[in-house]
Image 1: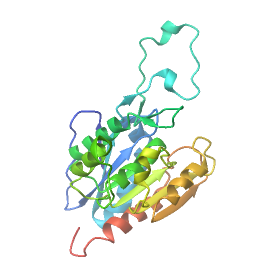
Image 2 (image 1 turned 180 degrees about the horizontal axis):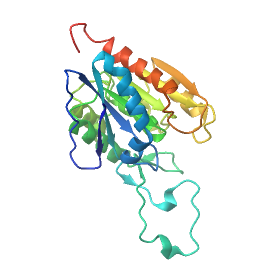
Image 3 (image 1 turned 120 degrees about the horizontal axis):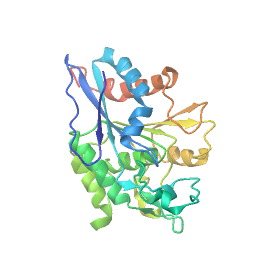
Length: 268
């Protein structure tokens, strides 16, 4: 079985495994307007298939689902249209969140530090993670987190680099063993380009939907081009995480390659 955790401020510890199986802790970062709970619901089939595929290797995936700290109101949603009666939405607060907000004027990411502090907290509560996986904005965040965890990467001095140092401290100074992005994209703000220069060295797997009309392929390709060791998988769907066996098996093989095959033969 997989063990999953959801986090939105409360401390949640991953379940311990039985039978001597080693945990593979994977941070799962949801997309814009989602939550940790919703992302888990959408990837439940993926969890089960991944657990079944890794079980013969004595590996148990532990998927950690934090929720972004930046609440989105109805007017923040794509395709929002104001109600005929403004009072109708006065008390309505949907369970929709983001890791950051984009300033459409400057292109800068607002509240990114707050989002990354929430990620650091989730990593700390999990006792560290082995990999990072995300969808859409969470896919972009996956690249950001994986790059930030690379100890050899130079970090801006002062407050600008504080969130990076918090991420590294939370994971015990360890880089991620792998990163997986579904419909992710390159973070374009100039203040974040240190994350891509040099390229992200963490092995990465990138899923692109051939019918995705939300994140243009060029945006995903821009992230792939900034990864040193990138593998690309194209599925025939749109803007979603494909959870059928055909598309989970490449993920299982990728994790096997970078966790099981890369480990000392005497044990993990």
